[in-house]
Image (cartoon, rainbow, N blue to C red; front, side, top):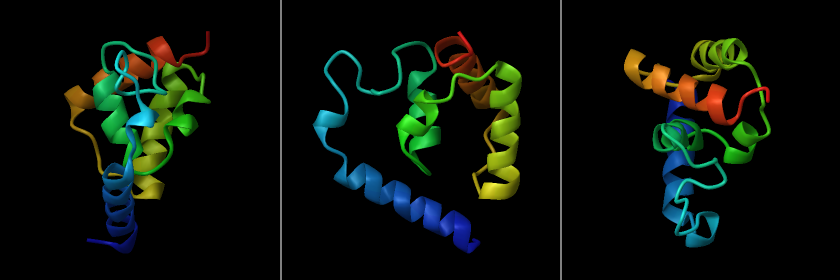
Length: 100
């Protein structure tokens, strides 16, 4: 395991260990991500490495989200997603945190 992946995993563990209920609400446990199909998968894939505000500040096209996922895997040490999970996450990002 390389240092980048180890560090990312360690940060993810700390984030989840010290997360407070105030980060989410009863209606949306994955806040600040908007509720919707794929929010859970997106939450766990993204929170492992960075704040969810990094995601919600996006507003990119599906093509750009796809390129960002490639960049995160190739250059930032993100573990590659299973193809079906990647599609769920891309659908979610394009629908709920897309350009419009």
